[in-house]
Image (cartoon, rainbow, N blue to C red; front, side):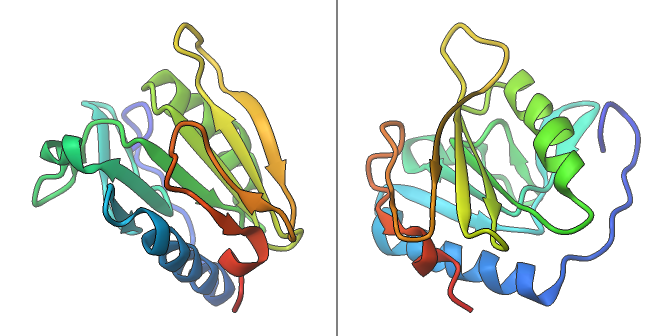
Length: 159
């Protein structure tokens, strides 16, 4: 639900799902001790009128109280959206604005066709994300905000 309206979108492709699974594996390999990692579909309730289902999300274990049986009720520490042919506008504009509005500190956009990960960080006093890095195929993804993260982009997209 986005601003009180239901959104109907097609199911992800099998390639999308395989990339999502691989990213979850590499994140779990380095971050599972500190973070709970969940993959879609899981509702993230951000307000009475805003519910999202990011492809992957991470919540620090110190904040696991926001994970309820039916949904995550509050902003995760990281949300990841994997681009699909029909999702670029939604992920790059609509979701990015929503996630920033609800103060999700880190947002990644994964483009498996180009083997890149765009890393956005929400400044503590900002209303919009800053693009702080674009990691390419051979580069190691790291994050000052998520110190456990360390993997080579292509390893997160092997299918």
